[in-house]
Figure 1 (cartoon, rainbow, N blue to C red):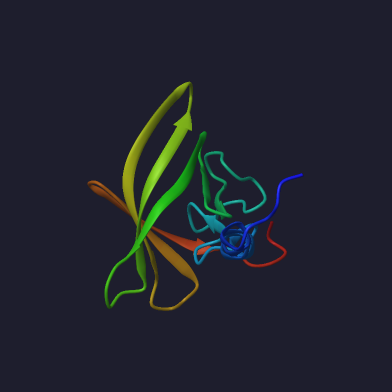
Figure 2: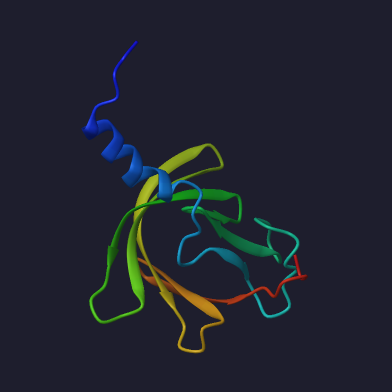
Length: 122
C-alpha cells in the first residue's frame, strides 16, 4: 500500500476545491435578442459556458490558461476548440458587461455581446 505523503495531501487539497466549481462566466447566453435559450449550440439558440467549457454553434472549446487583465473585469483564455471534424486553438477575451447581465466575447477581429438568459428560459 502506498503511503500518502504531505506533498500529495497538499496537492489534493489545492486541486479538489477547483473540481466542479462554477467559473466567473458560467451561464447560458442569448445569441440574439429573441434567441431560444433552451436550444444550446444551434443557430437562433443560445451559447453556454459551464465549468471551463464554451458550447457554441456546432463547436466546443475548453477555456484554458486564464490570465486576468489588470484593472478590468476580464480574462484572456486559450480556447482549445473542436467542431465539424476539426480542432484548433485561439485566444479569446471574456469580459463582463457594465450592467452585469451579460458578457463580451472578443476573438481576433470579432467582438460579440451576449445577454444572460434568465432562470426558467432554459
